[in-house]
Image 1 (spheres, rainbow, N blue to C red):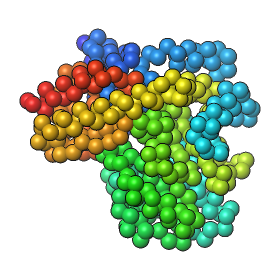
Image 2 (image 1 turned 90 degrees about the vertical axis):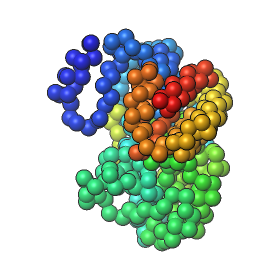
Image 3 (image 1 turned 90 degrees about the horizontal axis):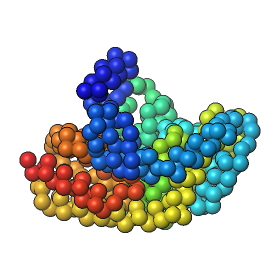
Length: 393
């Protein structure tokens, strides 16, 4: 098998940062990927909620290729039409006032945390502390890790940054008790991803909004995983009707090309030249890709499709839960779904992979479903059939 050669090379050369599956992918089309040995898989991971247009999207590939021939990178010392136009369009659709582009989700969190601290200084707030939530995941760089509410990620790298406190998610009283005049910002994921596909309650988000107004602090939403149509809306905050002061984004923003950023309300736009930067952030190549993704979502019906098939996936997972007692919960929103098992999620995922379905965990016993947004009901049926067969064994 050709894959064995690549697996051996990777084992010898790569730092052990990933516990990768023993699969070497070669190419993909739509929601299907093919490994170097010719085996096909139905992809319900999508690069961990990244490839929302699927694999091998011709329009996306052409946009990247044409822009690469024209102007790939020029740094932010100079402007370029692609980046300026994309930023203008994204702000118009999102309702925010300002934007900053970087390269990844963890970079977007770092930008948001710095901006919150800068804003606190500019506005004369005495407090600089940040409230984050237990069970959250915001990234692996030091700032992002410091606001990640999971000890298993934090413990090996202590001491982390000071000035961070944690509250229990979906407990409005606990959040209220955590916030005082020493706090400048609250950061949260509308749908906790690595924490197990847990949707924040409307009451909890409303309490955060109430505290924002009471203490004049910033509300930061991490929509790195749940943004750009994943929840069935362009951004997940729309489900609550409460817009944050800062929104962190990445993953799906450019359909597979590395990109991240923050969207900012004018009251929080405290950065000045020299405060923050990203050499590759918002380069014309990334923004050419991102422009295609945004157009597909907003003008080509992808957002409506994602909402429809997301509801269908939710129904099918509920049916599966009713059939298999060791599924203790089925939850999520749009095409960001999960089922929690009483045990054995790793074995279930391995068996699904053997049968040609790619899945990944979110937390210890939660199986995550984040397929490309172009997924069809027929492909959902196929995935459910494979999972049903595995769970029945």
